[in-house]
Length: 276
Ligand SMILES: [Fe+2]
Image (tube, rainbow, N blue to C red; front, side):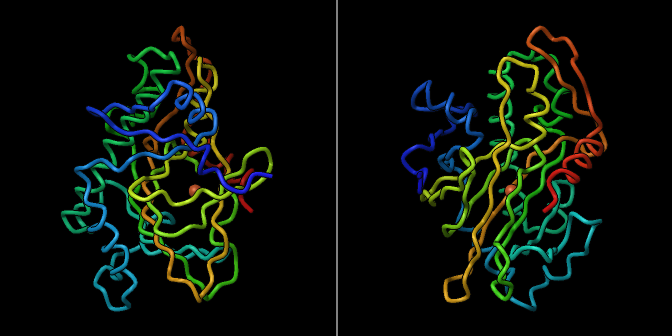
């Protein structure tokens, strides 16, 4: 039985906006697993972002007044897990986040685009089709969410139930252990590696690479139940998504269109399949 993937998970870094693995087989393994560590780029001030996440716990912070926008944005607590969050998509960062946090979000945009372009490069899908395939995201459009989460231990539910993410790429900064990924049917720990993000792939990335030279998988993951006697687990989560009103296209490496879906249609399908 595998207890931990710390010896196995590949580690990447960004160099001149390009994703670099120390060995070619690490890139293969990362794309196969759908998860890897990424060294936090030097220009990112993670402490400021983490502090913002902590400050949100104060009951009287003005950030508590941020309105709810639909089901996905605002302060959200779901009843089947411990995670509670402040979630906002890119268009609202400047309106509601402090300037340095909105800037932090845009730095994560750059990371997301770099990872997206690496995967699409390896997929063999012609570059002229990347914008269409990715619902705009590969060219810095699409949608992104920057969420600040913590785990409410008044509930004894799982921290976060097993699921795959719906979008393309998730960038996670977590301060404490608890994340697990499923490998060969078993959940194994993903230890916190200081000064590294955990990157994982989602269903939309699987969808658009399905007929390409490099079909990548969406990794099933969960967060174990957090206990009240431990410090509060905080996380910063960035989701790279297509334009939510748009389309996703599946191309092969010759550039032939093999299929497409509306983003809402794909997400609704996933919802039916994945809701626990
Ligand atoms: Fe997730």
